[in-house]
Amino acid sequence: MSRPIVGIIGNPHILDDDYPIHAVGHMNSEAVATVAGCLPMMIAPDPRLVSVEELLEACDGFLLTGGRPNIHPEEYGEPETEAHGAFDRCRDAITLPLVRACVERGQPFLGICRGFQEVNVAMGGSLYPEIRDLPGRMNHRMPPDGTLEEKFALRHTVKFSAAGPFHQMMGAQEVMTNTLHGQGIKEPGARIVIDGYAPDGTPEAIYVKDAPGFTYSVQWHPEWDSANDPVSRPLFEAFGEATRAFAAARRGQPLRQSA
Image (cartoon, rainbow, N blue to C red; front, side, top):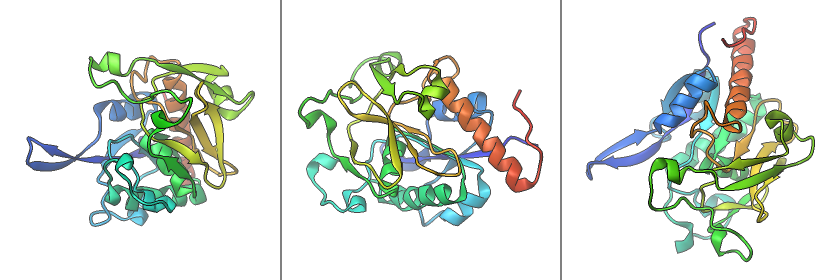
């Protein structure tokens, strides 16, 4: 069986100040290809260009990436404020129904940063617009200066539920992560299980209860140094195994282990 296809959600950018593009970070594609063992395929998240139905048929799993624009608060019933920042309504229109369809079908997805937030909102949850403004919370945002190594450096621990799925996957109940985000979960959506927290109480790891497929999402950035990091690697490996299993099942082929 050929490698299963993982659709990587892209983000809009302006190249050279005037040329609009969709793009995904190289580290996302590399993690999907070299650690998950799947074929990375960029998705232009715009309902004028693609439909959720087409994506479900074309891809075996999905990587819901991070991105600067935030989910519009209307998606969880709140008014827009300056604190909510920039938005990408086109991505909202694709990813939110895509998450719900994947949960229903058992189609694997891995949510990262904004993707983590999309999963919560798709399941009926809400978000705080700025975590660092909450009493007792840390500043989880990426440093504005420094090298990529410095920006993606490990910053704080995440503690998982004892014997929970993340604990079992990682082989440790507490791990170090490179959390980089401004928003965070306010109210968890229906069936959203918060399985890991930062020291300040910010949710950092979730999954969808009783979902038939892989629904793990994290608020940190496991795509960075995914081949070597002891937290990132098992997450992408598990995502790859789940995607291979889904692809084999729907093609009626025996599951073959990755090399």
